[in-house]
Amino acid sequence: MNAADAIAFAALMIGLISIFGVAADVYKRRIAFKERKLELAAKESAEQAASFAAQAQKLEQRVRVLERIATDRQGQEVAALASEIEDLRTATAN
Image (cartoon, rainbow, N blue to C red; front, side, top):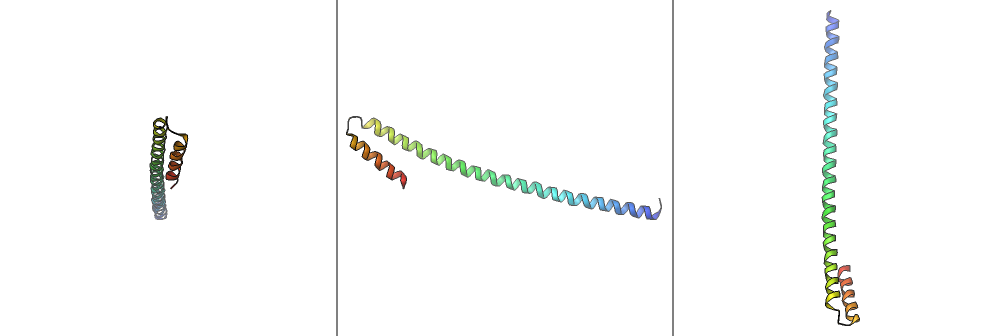
């Protein structure tokens, strides 16, 4: 192996090391991007789940009110029942 071959070999090794270093940096950035994307998706899912839970709770409260109206008003007029249901509609519309 002469001097020219040694210099060429050293340049090749330096080039390969540089290429692997750049490739590793690109890979690390890609992984960090995917992690951030997953974090944002998890946060969005958590917010959506909280929204659904609140909506389910509101619906459950409405059903309880309707059950109470239906069971407590068996002997009273239908007009009073209709009035309470209408009041419930206007209250939940706001």
